[in-house]
Image 1 (spheres, rainbow, N blue to C red):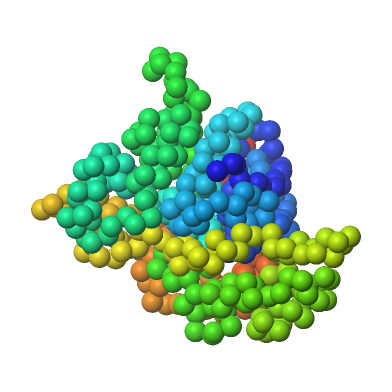
Image 2: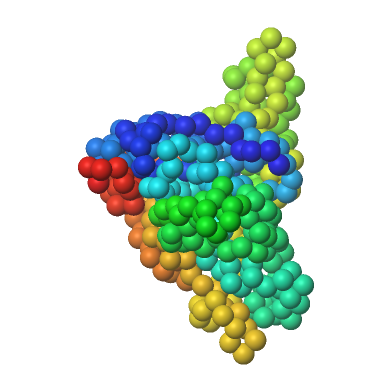
Length: 388
């Protein structure tokens, strides 16, 4: 697949050896959903002097990014990994301040998959594919079968960046000193050390165990929303007013949701023809595969470990500092899911934005910024002389 589209907001430390933020949006969103909040973060007193830039992605099958199948948690994680590595490699001067990843909903699940699978390279990447498949079939991974192909996706990311297929990248995604992709092709004598790639992560209104479309209110269901979009008659949607009425006709009752879905509509004012910007057929087919594909491995294993114990392989938690931000009124803010976050991440902070629903960063924008700014300030690193 071709590279993801993205938009950029420059920070006050642009052009210096400071940190970046990369944002992955949720289902049916796009980079523009994060434009205003990104500008507010870039202008925040705690962040301005430490921030190189904020990159807001269009995930595959959304916005201006390519349409491609499949649309699984594993391939979304690969897209995020490749963007992070490629963007770091071309940044000038080198971004030794590292990067903080932010993901909302679907983007949050992709972010978690990236960090969790790279935390488990010893179990997923180092064995040969033949050995791994044998052990998966035997049940050594506590019954987890890697149906989305995480192990192969990790190898594909490595190869696309010029790394050997089985080279661990835990130093790039694990807060350790790393070798840059460009220098990795050279002899050991010419290798240049680079700073940490991922300093921290922020996951917005989703938990590792959240089930997509499992909300109690039927009209909020992902499946119902996608089905309504598929049933909408595009020939009737010749204006925004007509499109709004058509979405209401097919069952999208909430005005806020209709307005959100209309951000996916491309309306040609000359021909008065419309089409969906997102790759709706693929999203309808794969929406259940956007959930964390590593889930069963982590939940079935009695303890973490990342090593064999009597033939069984337990997963290792991600050690990157991670902030989980939930809307107090969101259907994804479920105590039973939040209690299990520690099974996946060892350095966790949780926060709630009062009065916000699922779209925390939009519904309570300033409150969201004030919630994440202190955490970001701690992990955005300005390494210029006199920086902090």
